[in-house]
Length: 300
Ligand SMILES: Nc1ncnc2c1ncn2[C@@H]1O[C@H](COP(=O)(O)OP(=O)(O)OP(=O)(O)O)[C@@H](O)[C@H]1O
Image (tube, rainbow, N blue to C red; front, side, top):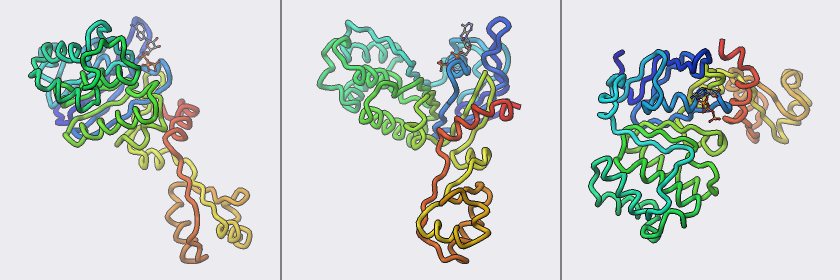
C-alpha cells in the first residue's frame, strides 16, 4: 500500500466476535489537515481510533502512518503520535509539572519543553499544584499539553472540548489550528458539531461501523444536495410577482437545490435586479442528521 498521506487507512475491519464494529473503512488525512470523525454512540469511532493507536488489533485491513505500514508495534513506535483520550485520567496527586515531566521522560523529550508548554497552555501559575486541585478545563489543558509535548506529526483527539466553556473550547481549537499550521495531521472525534464545523478541513461521517459521507463542508453540501434557502424582502416581492420563482418558493422563501444555486442567483441579480437577500446553507448539523436519517441510502 503506497501512500504518502500522514494517515492512510484502507478497508479496515474490526469484529468483536460476530459483531462488526468497524466495517470496511478507508480514509486519509494529509499533513496539515484536520478531519472530524463523526457518528452516533457506538458507531465505531473509538474502535477506529484505538486501531490507529495500536491498542486494538484490526480484524483485517491496513493502516499506514507517515508513509509506512504500522502493522507491527515496532513500526508504530517510529511514528511521532499524540493522543488525547476522552476521559483522560491523570495522576491526581502529582503536580501539573510532574505529570508533564513524567510524559517527557517517557517520550525522551527535553524537560525544558515542559516549561515552555506549561506557559503556552496558561498553566504556569498552577504548575506546582496537585492535579486534583485543577478545574475540568485545566485538566483538559494539561491532557492536551501532554498530547502535543513531542510536537507530533499525528494527533488524535477524542472529544477534546466536551464539558469545556466556550472560551476554553476556543483555546483548544486555536491550539489545533497552530498544530495544523506546523503540518500536523489531526483527527478530532466529537459530537459537538456546531463547535467543530469552523475548525476542520473535512468531516467523515459513519454509522454502524460504516462510512456514510465524507468531504469538506462544501463537498458534503453538494453530495447530500440539501436545500438552500434564499429570503429577503425584495425576494418575497419578486416571488409574488414572478411565476418562475413562485414555483420554487415556500411562503416567502426560495427553496432550491445546491446545483440550481448559481443559476437562480444569476437570475435574481441580472433578471430581477435583486441584490439584497439572505442565503441559508445547510450546516454540518443538518448534513449529519440528514445522513443519519437516511443511513440505508448512504451506507449502500
Ligand atoms: N471490547 C469490545 N468488545 C465487544 N464490543 C465492543 C468492544 N468495544 C466496542 N464494542 C462495540 O463496538 C461498537 C462500537 O463501539 P465504539 O466504542 O467504537 O463506538 P463509538 O462510536 O466510539 O461510540 P461513542 O460515541 O459512544 O464513544 C459498540 O456497539 C460497542 O458496544
